[in-house]
Image 1 (tube, rainbow, N blue to C red):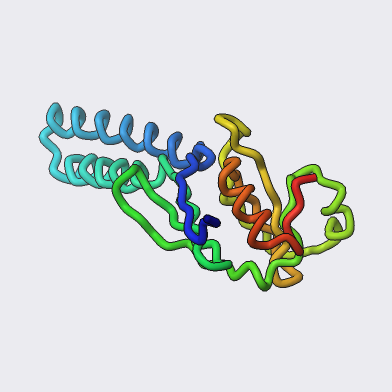
Image 2: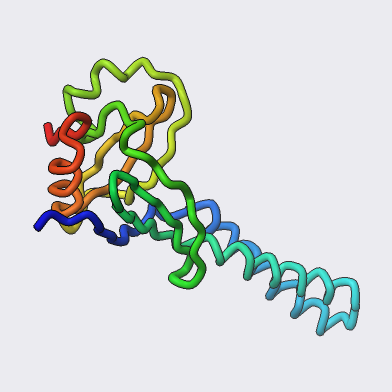
Length: 166
């Protein structure tokens, strides 16, 4: 029987800026807190605590995963931060998609001149059987995905008009 429902997680690209910010804020927090203890200065202590709080909030966004959920011609994407918090990114109706093809496919040649918003829900590199796909959506959006074989098979059977493997 054909699946009308499928979901899986893909690890997102590492957020290098957030990781660097986290390390810098942590070092500043340690230095200012040690300085506050040695000097006995309350203002420096408050500054050290502020750096510590900044370290905590910057660490919330360093590890991102994307959960793809296919259900009845809709693709829902959620962001999962640090394997704890979930935020719904968007729901895409596949009826509004123009083409869904691999990143280097010749099917995308006609859409190369589309100047619009680019949204990246893919992983850093193709690994563990994941392949990068591009969807042109509503004429002015380019959306990047990393799909596994099962999702490719489902999309190919449910949306043959827009989906291409080549």
